[in-house]
Amino acid sequence: MSGSDAEKDERSDAGDPVCWLHRLCPTCGAMPTDDPAAPPDRCWRCGEPFAEG
Image (cartoon, rainbow, N blue to C red; front, side, top):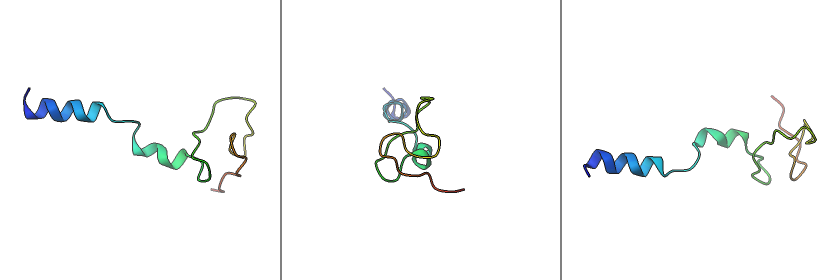
């Protein structure tokens, strides 16, 4: 395997991109949910209100 193939394999094993960080609840780290029963203005897991803006 060439060096570029090894680098490609390492990157493909990584988790979700860092760009998801802004969507996480700052209190409990939960990802947003698509559940229609979840409150629209706060975290579905811990109840922390979403930041304005």
